[in-house]
Length: 335
Ligand SMILES: Cc1cc2nc3c(=O)[nH]c(=O)nc-3n(C[C@H](O)[C@H](O)[C@H](O)COP(=O)(O)OP(=O)(O)OC[C@H]3O[C@@H](n4cnc5c(N)ncnc54)[C@H](O)[C@@H]3O)c2cc1C
Image 1 (cartoon, protein in one colour):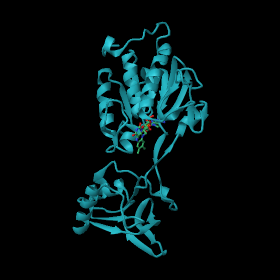
Image 2 (cartoon, rainbow, N blue to C red):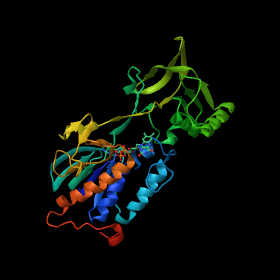
Image 3 (cartoon, rainbow, N blue to C red):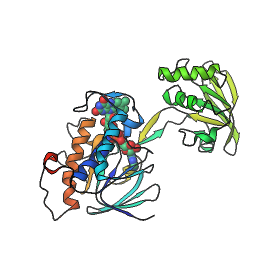
Image 4 (cartoon, rainbow, N blue to C red):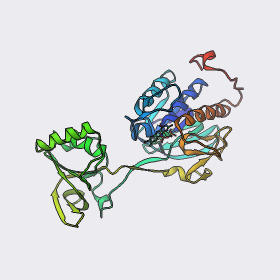
């Protein structure tokens, strides 16, 4: 894999990182955007794609996903390089000559780095079951990347929110049998998804097991055989199942970022409010991850911070060139 040489490495493809790539392009700087998730959009994409946002300037109402789609479209003239499904695991070097490495082994050189990792990496909440790690990746999953794997299978799906219901509905027709396990009788999912699930329940493809929660797993060599459940009175019930899909929401972790030696304050990167630079020259932080007195954690704040960071990163990318400020109306979409 050959090293990617760029001007700005943007870590995190949430709304702040995406708009930052546009700002970099406007200033004639090439950018690479790296994100741990398989799709860009950060919280807007992963946590609330269908929810309307009301406080994006000039957009009286726009859903999380529609905002991300618009940002991606706006970036097209500058064709930033998106490296998705990989996290940045290593950063070394100094301003003008940084080296980064991702979890897929991609090496990148950049003259400046802009960190826009929000609250960090989204990680699934794992159910606290003994030896669950022995089954993870073979019989126990927290997301579905290959639907075909579940053809004609017996699947236990645990959780009561949109992900659990959506996957029960999506896999229902191809699976042999699906058990949906929830600790309450009521589900917290979109009405139309619930209706689809109830149709599959009526067709005998899905069985609802409520109010029950996961107790333990039985199997050999990472291959699941049974899922043991308990109800509120501690009565046990055992289901035969080949797979367990557990959807208990996502938590966030800063991950390797904590080892990069940047000054932090309560899990946020401390920056100078006038230029967004962290405690290390040439490394900037914007959006939810950055902090300074008076910080407001809003999408629009991340946009402005991206513009500020890029105007200051320019000095590290073009050390011998003065930056002449210009409006977009004056210069157009050319760098
Ligand atoms: C339910 C909900 C509703 C909201 N409503 C509003 C609203 O109405 N208005 C508003 O202004 N804000 C709202 N917010 C807040 C808004 O979504 C955040 O302020 C915004 O998403 C922050 O953007 P960001 O780009 O800084 O970070 P994020 O959106 O968190 O994106 C960060 C990205 O960085 C990636 N990442 C993390 N670590 C690494 C790593 N080491 N390597 C590679 N990638 C990494 C993550 O995978 C993620 O994609 C809402 C939030 C939630 C949860």
